Length: 214
Image 1 (cartoon, one colour):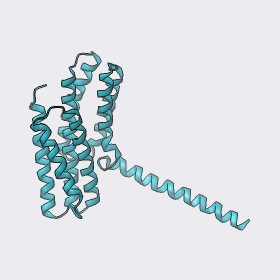
Image 2: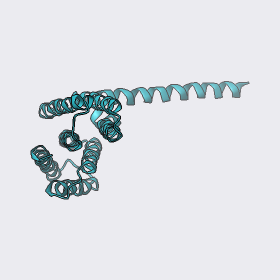
Image 3: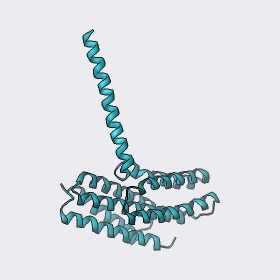
Image 4: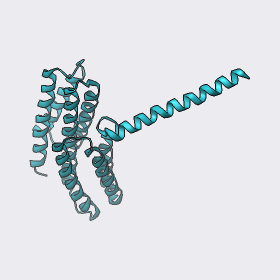
């Protein structure tokens, strides 16, 4: 009897501990979505929108794009002013694409360019977050943000089919990001400077995408 009571208490305590840590994680994700799985949600929805559009399922494509825009909105509260403005401009471009999808009047190249542009700006925002955490000696969080920046660049490359300087710039960025993951700390001035350089390179990459012909 006594053993059963102890087991029951242990189960209850275990349940509440799990609930406590789940709530902690959930609250953390709401406050800082850029360093949680929420950061990759826009990518998932943009890729869905692309796939549905290729199947001529315009309603589903438009819905997935709406979801991508909402996912970007959630990230906006966790970025600096410059990144916020860039994401607002990104959303405006995606909303224009959304209108054309509903009318079935957008060339595939125009849609892919807008999606690639969005992913580039998301990568820029994540690198700004990574730099912020690196300067406050929070390497783990900085690397998490860096990881999501890399996800955005990888997905942008999946949409970019031309073997041109834009693609080469993206591949170079991935290589540079990989080199930072192996470092014990990102808080050294030299490594913070490396992040700053990556931000400049992503900025240049986004400009290339925006200036490119469809």
